[in-house]
Image (cartoon, rainbow, N blue to C red; front, side, top):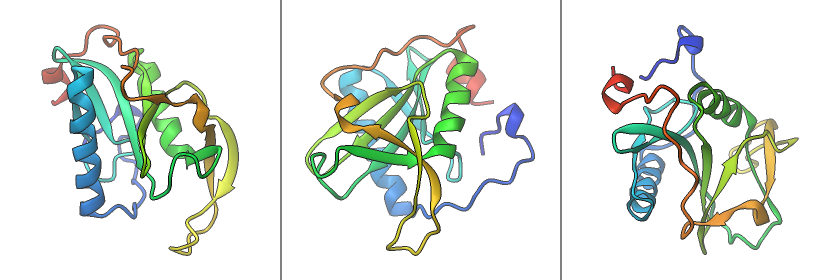
Length: 166
């Protein structure tokens, strides 16, 4: 598992993510990486965010992937676990690269450059009987279609893929 200095020794939460869901996220990252002319490495299961974006073997961003079983027009906003956003923002700020939230709805795939926690609220997966968790709400009209490439930038001090993988 990837270990980030400030998280060393920390026990990760148990996620309700199945191997099939991870595979679907991996396929989505691969599908989006090609037109953006980047590569996206999926993180280990249990990591707080889903992937790292590389351009020319240099880290240029992080990505959190969400898949929804509704249309993008069904609600005016979308919510994401705030802890995932916090961890993603910490990593992106550490390396001075963007955090991109990538969401696949049944009718489209869109992304948002994420620099804030959004509007904080509480929600839970009622179908699973989850307790309410702290979530970040973002307006769907803040998301961009994937035909537009996010503003990726090389990591401060140019962290290369080989260094990252050690």
